[in-house]
Length: 349
Image 1: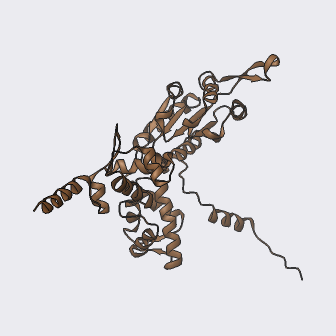
Image 2 (image 1 turned 90 degrees about the vertical axis):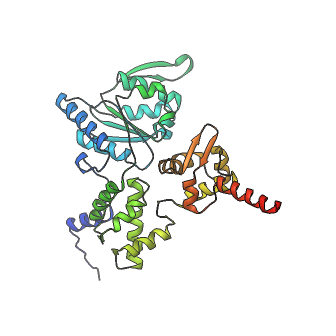
Image 3 (image 1 turned 45 degrees about the vertical axis):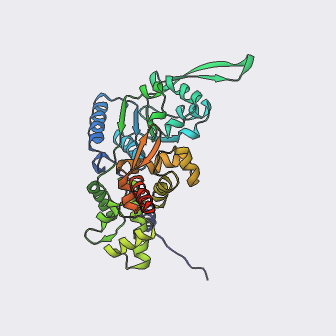
């Protein structure tokens, strides 16, 4: 016997919303932290709207996980514009960019993540599009080659990069607004987690979100990731409520220590101390020792270690600090030298 199931559109929408909760803010007023950047963006957006013009091109740069992609979405929402996304590695030839630009309408926002990884031919192809809103596109090759001047509609290019130093000067100079994103304070991360917990319908005891914020390395992406892992642990090992004991146990399982260091961070420090005697050591040598990519160490590990004073960058290479050794219970170079001298003195007796 056939069973007829009646499912209302409302129940479908509720189910879809339940499993597709986005923690990204959609408007500037919903964003927490980065006060200086938000104030500048608010003025630029208001001025552009009064003139009925698209925004100037924007470059967001800073360590990963601080909200560059989120801010690009916020800018598009504030301007009431359509957002088209791509990334530097995906745009390998002029034809790839041409396909994007030809579909851009007036006022649209084109977001290119990891823009520092654009190839030189693609980068040079974008220059006239950013300045004069036109491109010269070459069709065919050899004797049959011809160049077509293709006019574009006025758009806003938003670039994001974790390695601003790798951007060429001509490309950097074509952005009208350049914003550096700073690490977030523990208070700001706690406020972000409170908003995320509300969206996820999580019940939290007092101070539990502060525990997560303190171990989030100053990055909202890390904070939200840890919140979701703690939520999973609470649902399986507890009663779904975030308590201090649940949070501590979950973060211990994730191998996150009280300062937010994970196993890769600790391996980086131990390699510098045990293999390279505290440094200085080149980043390529450390990467080879750990079996990791250089970019991973430079983009993910080093920014936070530098921020908390666990690492020094010198002309000769990376050096560990006494503060890092003390945190992991390792002997720094001065302690080792003192210990060696004491041993020699004892032997001399």
